[in-house]
Image 1 (cartoon, rainbow, N blue to C red):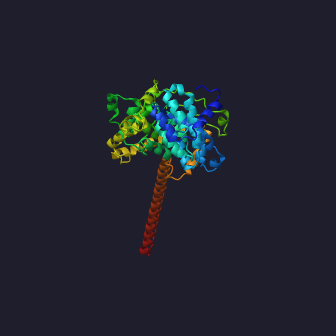
Image 2 (image 1 turned 90 degrees about the vertical axis):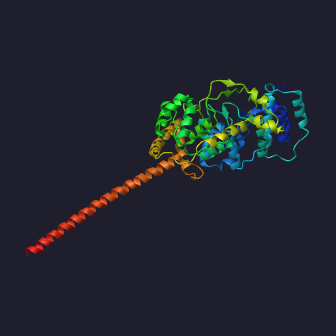
Length: 438
């Protein structure tokens, strides 16, 4: 169906606002129509924008999160939903269903539409939900329609995911993102894990891997740095993203083509007052991806309705496949928080801790003037809510200074004591000589 303007498109989509999301989703599943999750991110970004920037909610945000809103257009699906949950933001589920149907109607020719699908969409209008549906339950139903495409994670392209997460996530949310995809992100990794990560990123051959397998941790870090990639065994946010991508085996992955039409937002919906938005560019430390593109048609054709449980384990939700593949890997590897394997590696791991500081400074260089207040704000956050690696470094420096001062004080005290004893001995000798000479 052709629409004369976007207002007409919105009016057509409004017919489905009161339809139960479960019924609406089932129609697409019955016709084997599924959507990549970057479409879901687009819908969430545009539906939630006016709520996130509502002065009523903004008054309750922390300074840290208010600063991160500058990069709102780079929020991933998980971060948007966690923000809604933790700030008790009430979003109208009807708006999400309306925008979803606008997207489908605008791109209907790109999907394998049929007479049966059109008939089901017409008939479903008869089964409306009188009670208002919560946004959480609506999204839970729509989740079964979205899959994770190649070259993307949580709705973000791998080409900018590292820079986006560094700008928008704190460590707690980042660990939650890992758990969403079945990856437990540790604070530090051992030598074997570091070797595996470097080998996967640079696609090393067996011979190249064997050459560096006997290197110490500090040497592996220097090796990676010479090849243009900074990493450390003590994981900062940038290293945590690398670890997540490595565990999900998404290095050098082909990127799915995005040929959809997103011209579905009206002018009055675009002109919502928001804070000044920051820009994020792909850096040389970003996630490496393939230059090849793959078609999006295959995942949609292979999807099977959720009602068939035997086949659903394999095809119904591609996102689950990623989790199932990675869980066995975690059992094979050494515990993430186990003690270091060799005592001689301990002093070696202290040295690379300073190197990620340079990485952080380089990544934050484009926004130096605005980043300074952000660091101050992060220091105000409770340690059990936000883990900052630099705190450990500061503690070590304080301890070193303390013992250095203590050593100086002890040395001075010893010298004073020696001088006093010598003076007393001289005085006693003098008086003894004077006494016996009389």
